[in-house]
Amino acid sequence: MDDVIAALAGRRLAVLTGAGLSTDSGIPDYRGPDSPPRTPMTYQQFVADDAFRRHYWARNHVGWRHVHRTLPNAGHHALAELEDRGVVVGVITQNVDLLHEAAGSRNVIDLHGRYDRVVCLRCGTVVSRTELAVRLEALNPGFVESIGAVGDIEIAPDADAVISATAHFQVASCWAPDPDGGPGPCGGILKPEIVYFGENVPKERVARAFALVDSADALLVAGSSLTVMSGLRFVRHAAKAQVPVVIVNRGATRGDDLATLTLDAGTSETLAALADRL
Image (tube, rainbow, N blue to C red; front, side, top):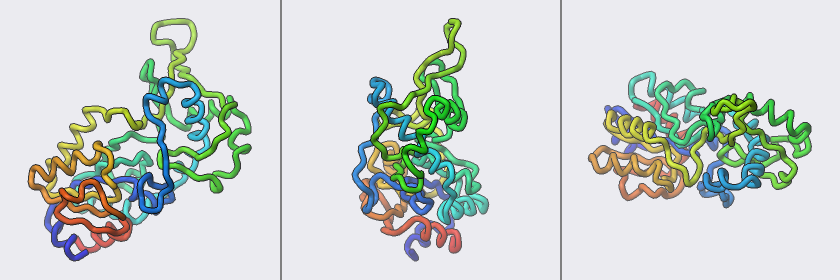
């Protein structure tokens, strides 16, 4: 920890966070040392197959309630405090749980989107997940109760519940006006405003994230294995520019060979210690 303090002291930090930061809030990660094997749905599966979409929305209809009630942990609060003090210039997060915002962080780039909004793939209308929940409940009365208490169900990091009995679930389509002027609703496919595996992060969002890294004197990675390129590219970018990179994570990461320093530790306690000592 003394080495981490020495590497970061006096520097303005860009921070990249991953699922490991939210585990202490009760949201599991995908690739932590103790995580069970998971096979996330891809974008191609979601858009091409009615059965995949039905399975996804059934699980999400249960699981999003868990994420909705989670609270920021000490790590989230530490980053918000460091931003208030001018140490952290902003946060790029691979998480979709909005816990950084809930903790008070202001300059947050939600790289992979956010769980609380839904977008129509036909007309582009965005609605709140709460509004969609009302419609799904009307289409599937008693479904959540038939599954069991949310607290007894395994929850995946993207707000899915791990359940299998979904064949009878009714999926809602877009109810906005038809963009072509037809008499009925749009009827397009609704998708969470989350970047799926196999889907690209919007270019404008990536550009803002690179600009954030460029505005800082060091890059701190907290709770990410950097397995996917969407996060690793920022470590590569910083290392190429000879900007110090410090990685705090439980277990090895794909960016360890690019880092100035790595610390195999939990993020909550480490970030809290940084807030006390920087």
